[in-house]
Length: 142
Image 1: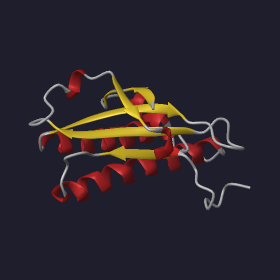
Image 2: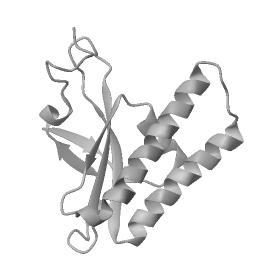
Image 3: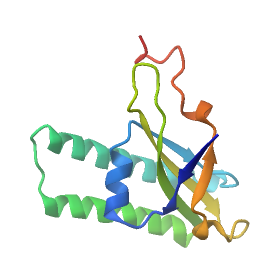
Image 4: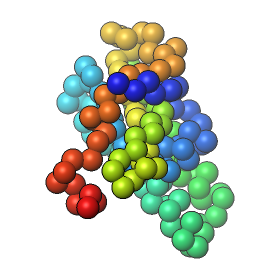
């Protein structure tokens, strides 16, 4: 088990850190299928932001203003989820893998405020390293 430092997803800085990761783990205990669409939307926004930032690194700059707009869109998605009574926490976990010593995983935890009212004050969550391990059939392993 690994303790991952988390906090409510609220800032552009947090989004930049999440999008620098190699993978994303979304933990959603007690969040039913009624939230599937919004959870998928959040995952897509994070993935799009990661793509845009990676494109900028390769030299195709979209500009600071456009990045802010993108970050604001992601945070607006988070706010829509929170308005439905869900706490959204996020953090980054170092999870070195064979031949990928710098492997990092974005961890996003969604919990219902009704059954987990203390979640916004939570500072750490425990993640089983097996949940973020690359398996032997993963195409990136050699």
